Structure formats: C-alpha cells, structure tokens
Figure 1 (cartoon, helix red, strand yellow):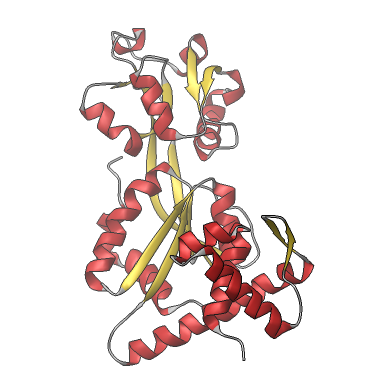
Figure 2: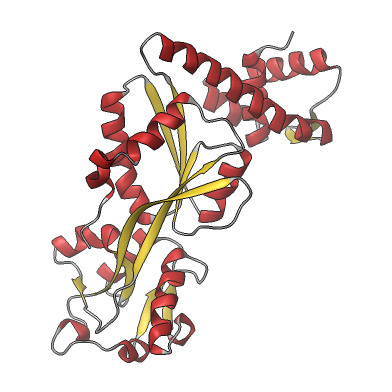
Length: 306
C-alpha cells in the first residue's frame, strides 16, 4: 500500500532534484529523504531517479509519476478539507503564483483579511515571471495565479482582478521635474530605464503608445531591468526616468525621492487577472479564497487609486 507521506517526499524531491534541499523544505534529514525514496522505489519495483555520485535526476518513470502523484495528493487534500467543512471549519494549504508588481502589494492585503475569516488555512505565494506562474498553474503546482496577461491555455479561466496605473517617474533633479508638461513624442528624447520587452509593463505601454503612432522600440533604453522594484530604485539613484507600476513606486513618491511626470494624453493602465485551472477539482480552500476575493463587499481590497 502506498503511503501519502512517501509520495509527498517523492514530489518535493522530484521538484528539487536534490535530496538535501528536499529535506530542508520538509524539515527532515537528507538520509530520511533517501530512505523514503528507497522505500517507495521498493514498493513500485522500479527506480525513479538516476543517481550519479551526489547528483540525482528524475528518470522516465519518475517523470511519468509526478503528475499522477500531484493529482493523488490534491485529491487527498480535497478529501480532508471536505470533511472539515462538514464539521464547521475550513483547513488547508492554498498556493498562489504571482507575476505582477501590483499583485505583490494587493495579495497580502487580501490574504490577511481571508486569514481573519479562515485562520486554519495556510497560504504560500510564489513570486516570479509570468511564464512561471502560469506553468505552475497548468501543472497543478499552484491553486491560483495573478498575472497581467490572459495567455490562452487549455482549462485556464481568467477573471479581472484589479487595475494598476503605470506612471512615468523621474529623479527630482531631472529636466522633466520642472516646467512644461511632457508630450508623448518627448519620451524618445531621453534615455529611459525599461523593463524587458515581454513584460506586462512594456506590452501595456506599447499598446497606449500606438495611439500616437509610437512604440516601445522607439524609446532609448539606458538600462533594462527585469524587476519593477529594481527600476524604482534605479530612478531613485538618478539613472533616469522610467514607466513603472504606481503601486510599486508609491513609497518613493511619498518620500519625495522621485517625482511623477504627467504625459499629455498618455495614461496606461495595466489590467490584472486572477486565474484558476478548471482541469483540477478546486479544493475547499481554493474555492473559498476565489469567492472571498471577488465578493462585492471585498471590492475595495482589490482596488488601487487610479
């Protein structure tokens, strides 16, 4: 008979391909991880990892087992949560992938209020690139994802989550900080700090610039950074102006470390979406969080000042 704990150990070991790291995550020793994997392999009469010295890699059998184990553990979690609901409480572990700067600021607020209602639900938020958040969602590694783009994926349902205004910020001693308003065509006259071209920020800005027969490719980058907070810090350090999430720049604006530069007729707004994978049965905690997030009485938790 397979043991759920052994399967959980296998899944973590498969995701890390490192028994020591798996032990750190599971808070057990590396020899204990090895023993659990060995026991599981003995039960299944096959090896799941190729071993070469201290290096391990999933073999073909192990790779095929991963999605089945993940589904089995999800069903076990669903069973446990369903029973507790009948007993008048909600328990579980909710995982969320987030790929937007604004989401990183909004989600903790919602998660905190949700925990006040359901204190027995533990929550984990993975912050990374948009592709990582959606890949995790498609693979069933996270329950929900917050993203700035609706990338068509089979079984993925998107719902409008929030809006985030993109603002042009500049160092206080920059020429744009004094005098006349800036026109869209002025953006090509100075070097800017930019996000990577595939980022939600650049895609949103490119869409708005198209109204003026302009594009992001016309802008002059002096520095490209793959992180919004790093861009805000670069502007604080005087590198140059940048378009960033208003939410991410708010602390620097309030402190007077940067100034907001209005651009005539240009007000790019990035739409944020929460996504779920309808190919997997929702856990009780996941369903409760989705309903809580989009409940009319909680709309203010998702709003930004635009």
